[in-house]
Image (cartoon, rainbow, N blue to C red; front, top):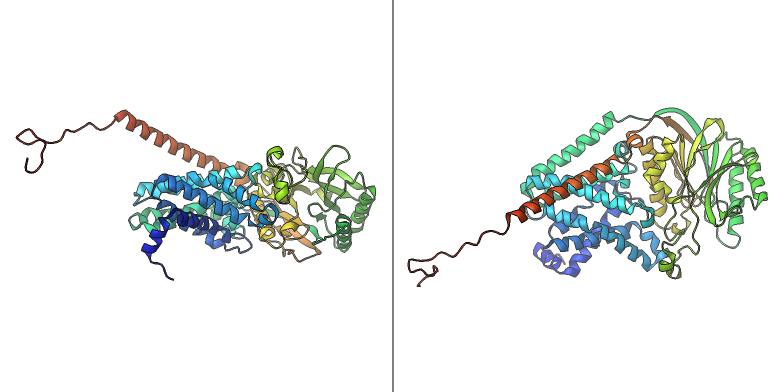
Length: 528
């Protein structure tokens, strides 16, 4: 049945229909991310949500539409958590979705009805800034980290990667929201098309300027990096079986002149100090392939209490002493926030039964021939500041050891692998994303792909010729400058609104005008 415009307006007048439309509109941007990877859709994906919010009958309803759209967005980008956290996934999405309520309020504030040219111009700066504040707040690891930032949908677009080297993923998110705002105005408000078109032209000009003027990484060397991906290994004795499979795959690298071998997250399930036999086997492998091996130990440590996830470098004589303990842990997956209050999550899903322990600092490791590597573990690759700090500390090559085996049949492995492209482009350093079960990927210093992905169906080792580059990108030098600019924009908005409100209060209520009277000294009324 085809619905007319009047039918749609009538249905959107119902709070239930409107709420469902907001959830669906908020979920649409997920199609821009891998695995669908419809990157071009990100430039219009917010338009239905913006049009819905600007039509809200009240400011409160606009805030509700922002909240419900945020719920839909968070649920869509984290849908792969449903098998693990069940209903708790919806609870988390609802809580984080509330961050978009102010964005919804501001959308109606600037775009409702027939906005003036000034309002449209202001919206092109205010609404992207407000969106950036939402991304900044939810990027805190305790709220789930920066998974699904809008700008990360552009991981495979060369001009966008060049922009990332200037302002990081934050600049991409800002420009994408600005483009969506401009398109929404073009669709809905004919009278305001001139400033909307001007906004689109300005975005194109900024992209072109970044393409021409931003510095390109100067490639000045190459290294051969091997990734070992054992694939899914289940059943009793899984840790021992996985180690044996990784051992077999690593032996196949002998004679291939590799500079470093990288295993995935939790590739070793035992503390090497407690299992000297495993340490000896790793040292023998290192001698056989003539390269150091970076493993990841997920085990209770013998020298201190608790379970750690640690990147450990092993050479021909055994562990070299270089070790990085994971600092940022996955909420519920590796620890339960406020366990005394939220510990019940372990009874309804696969939340961590025991909290992992945290490392205290990032580490740059020295590998043979002067190569310096900066390791990260799992979703730490989603945090732009971590890779930036490693690059500034002298890392020539960024590494992420990951495992997404719990989410093999979802979009999570592809989406996780794509994040390394952005980290490489932001820092001007190549990045290796090595996993247990796929997707493993390697990217050059401009974020370009190097070789082929190892998919979730692969159990293999692969060697990549990785270009090295030096120099400092604008993002590595200046960091989150756009986030500070967005804060200034919102502060200026707050000051302007506050001054306007103060003027209204000082002016006081409008003076009372008595009704007009007739010559007979009675109020003007016909026949009196």
